[in-house]
Length: 120
Image (cartoon, rainbow, N blue to C red; front, side):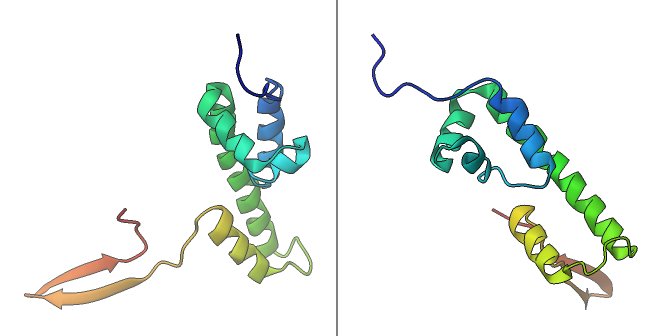
């Protein structure tokens, strides 16, 4: 006998998620598209491997769309492009960070310290 609430998961959500994320829309905002709480999406990632795979495929597709948009904007193809909003988006959605390099000399050898790498 099944216990608990029945799932609202549907296999067609996989392609819908990929299509959604390909537009540089977030994984969490997909919850609004299908009318569930975003915690539900994270549960489905754990329970349905095909949904997890869709998320993993959707993210780089969205990144590609985002980068193409940035490219077009920097080449004057998008008038009134909001660079500040774009930088914020890249940092928060795609984990872009400002790269900080410090060159120091120790015992005659140059050392480059890259503080942008996450050591965790």
